[in-house]
Length: 50
Ligand SMILES: [Zn+2]
View 1: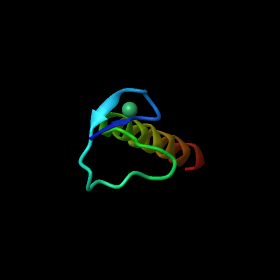
View 2: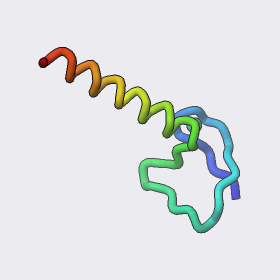
View 3: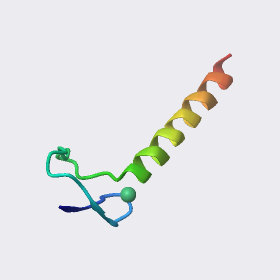
């Protein structure tokens, strides 16, 4: 089963058992990238306040 990632638009092979959120499928690559950016943002806020 192939699903199109809502972030990069690439089609990825996904297991039918894997649930897709209503907002759309997010590929592992975009998920990692997003998480990293989120962490960076948190780190930035932390250093700003302390
Ligand atoms: Zn993607």
